[in-house]
Image (cartoon, rainbow, N blue to C red; front, side, top):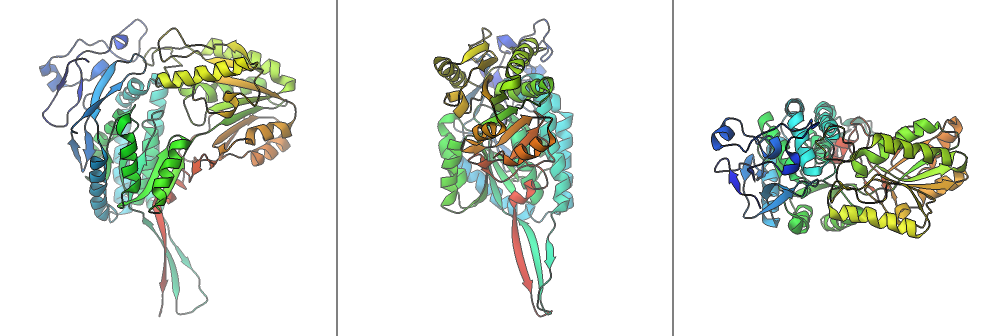
Length: 534
């Protein structure tokens, strides 16, 4: 491991002296600038982290009660493109998690009394700071998650917009007055904040999955403890730095990072602590079920955004070029590592061959595998070796059962966590890639004959997050949109997420909705007040 140092005696970043070799400047690199290994004087004047990352934002300690707190142990965060260590981060355990919850609980009693206008103003300041620092924040995302810099920049704007949206929604938490049959009574409905919310987020959108939850929670008057994914804690800690600068009061936004080894105990602590009133989790269905068991013992309010197996249906009436464009956008964003990525492509027999041909051509022409900081890269690394092995398993299983590799099909020569964008034809319903979420750059195509057959295949799963279909038949559009068993439908559109619209699924894809005007309701309790003797 590279020699590390601390900038200050308390709470400052720890990271290698020199940038990882693969992130040193190369011809055509647009992401990071050339820097020699810095001296201490230079770092004190304007500190930069590994590979030019902002040391002011690249924090490594936990953030609790408005203070940066080191832990007894640390764990390494690595760049998935090279395996190089980006920094050593505080490895919190159950004790630190419980302490953070107590801090958040104490802060809740004052935060809930802050006016909606003031909460709105503070969230807006936080949004403004995110936008001012969006380039540095995007570089942190690319460094720790591997996604191409252009995508990371898009995520930064998207994540900041949740703070802007909920800063506006904070002032629109309305109750009701209900007419009663009694002349001497008045019935009122109040909406009040739940309390402390445990926020457990994934690595694939390390910033947006936080602000989508935290923006709503803080707008409602709740306080939060965030446990970021062990692969990508730097984004959550950078947001803490900006929240502090924005004036978010101590204890309102807290972050407890931890290693994979401690994730289970920290997650359990955040879900069972009696001072926690709400749990919001984004991640796998399997993990979500475990957290639901923990929450059940004390009947906590829960929001879950879990796994998907999104169908992408192309009917004979579709505009094939438009469908291919949508397929590219839906499937290969973040190298296929999103919960709403198209996982199964169902193409009607009449246009099947044309679609497959044009899809393969688009993949070969438009997709470029490489380091996320390199100009022109559209496909970065998968998050780790386990993710690559899953894609390999799905490809080999499909081929062994008769599928044909149209393009791709193996690890990319660029490095260990890179996989070629892959297109399979002659795929059947019994193959793993048809039954399991791949979470990688694999597009399996299943041929179908009738609308009823396509809907049956699409709905033959226990999850239902997103679904997509392409058609120019108005009657078919209404029928299919209503019959797909998913929480979100894209009609002639491969990108459906926005801050204004509700995000969530049905079946085992989750509970509740995030974003939109509905998102804030997840952090509010409805109280009925009967006022008598009027």
